[in-house]
Image (tube, rainbow, N blue to C red; front, side, top):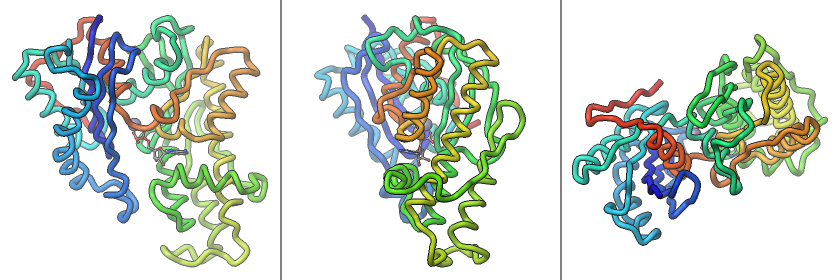
Length: 338
Ligand code: KG4
Ligand code: ZN
């Protein structure tokens, strides 16, 4: 039995989790900085790292309290070291190194994107290593939109990526165009439920074989919403319907994501599909991925909504797996933003 403490500070969520044997969550806490960044319409790196610094140690104490554990009960420290905002990564890394130095616990470096994939594998009572490899994995978040050929819990080969915006970034930018608050994903998701997805015909851009591009969709929404006057803060056209724009935009994004995922699955002969990252909380994407997996008769690995966005459960989970494989880092461990 192994207990891993996970620390995640790569972007705008400070998170700590205790996970037993890579799948059982003993306790977890996430402190979101959404309110801090909302008035700027995006993450301000300086504010984010400062906030991580303030919040991380109290969060660590409360997570240990929740699990009724002490650092003595922990077997390894897993920390996100890439990719992310460098100032933010360094806060988590500094804390993990301090703990390692004080306790002698081993330090396990974790890749945030691989952790998202692992988070999806943790759902249900399944053992991640028993998944029907290879899996076609779609990672969709505010910072990434990529396809991977996943061959094991810690073995992922990138086979497609976005050439411009990440899907979550496109959601956030489209929300800004429609005058909606940051982060745009959850708001557009909710509004789309009241809109007609066929009201506007937005492009389903196809670039390269397994790559994505969202700038065309984003620009099409801008013109549909504001006509020729695309200046920042310009009013929406009188006949523009925000719910219809949201639903039509979402339909275009989801169509593209699922189409490429299925093409990736064909290309690698996948035994299952996996969708993860913040945008995996999206109801339309969840429904479409589910329908596609059922139509093909293959399993779909999808994190719960709470574990779709950034958290430390996935970091501790993958950390357990890497720890078992013998992965260790010294105190010279550095952050790798890209
Ligand atoms: O994985 P995540 O928490 O952070 C990154 O690593 O980027 O993803 C955050 C992104 C944001 O762009 C947010 O708008 C999007 O995920 N998101 C959603 C939903 N919930 C969060 N996008 C669409 N629908 C949602 N329900
Ligand atoms: Zn993330």
